[in-house]
Image 1: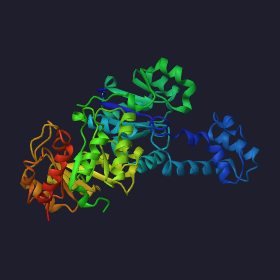
Image 2: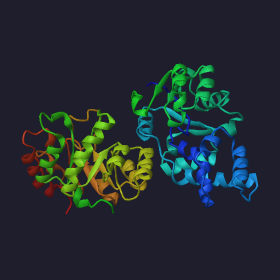
Image 3: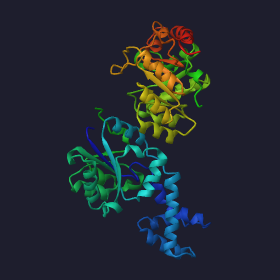
Image 4: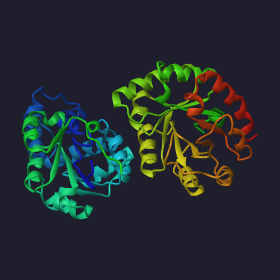
Length: 216
Length: 213
């Protein structure tokens, strides 16, 4: 790969963080000493955090406001970013190679900055990235390409010299529509979108070992 | 200190160029039996799964003889096989990542060519330094030379152990006497030799005279 700029998504692309979100409702209930129903995950996986808090409050008769429940869940998520979330396979070797090849790297993520920083610091990889950009800071979600355009500006690389690694279909769609080169990264959480991603993205990889870096 | 400087005395860096019909693990075992005290597994081309498989075999040998094993550059392989550590180049990012991912107990070796790089690496948590190249070498064509004076200067100014590397063989090893090194690292001087055991034995005897007393 000769790309000078690389924009990485974080969750599901660099970090194997999806299982945290997948089971967050159950984990939260267990911290309260409650047993989650088996179908809880199916029910909440398409919900926003606020909707999820409402459902938990009602079905498990929790003595907290929805806002308080959201706070508690966020604290639980934060704890996992700080102490647990691992890198996906071959990420560290890939970052080392890109760094040696002189590429400029950044992260464009929907996750809040303090969580991103906590995880990157613990994993010792913060230094590989020129900057972190969050959807919150960009002002839009990845359903529009604003965050990618902003990242490109900050990287100071050309559109045709820059590549995005991303695991989520909706984000890949908006990046492709904006003319970016996008590599779809396999993640178990997006397995049902695999074929759709393959048809849109420029390439599709199961792990970063497949992506060859040309050393300069 | 995670790395005992005496274990760095005769440091062997593997190279599969001259393997022939032998396995790398068998060559490493011969070298250890003949006096090698530290092993760095270096693979540049192997796919991850093959690298891990190879590293596991070599680790069985090094663990049996209680010889430290570090992996060249590949933090992930070191993590996967629970090696004793890694050896990385002069990159602060790689040193930080290796420390964070492998933990405080593992050995991190760093390459240095100048006093500045050596001091920097020590400051960033390197456990030992590989300094070179001290003699012209055929295995690393782009490597830059380190003079006797610079090597001496580095050894006197850093507290962590220093291993000289690059083009060292039985003919020139005594030329390192008086530099203050704790050991020598060799590649072809062992692994390119028709009789690995004899080559390692000869170096193991000579290196005693080359290191500081």
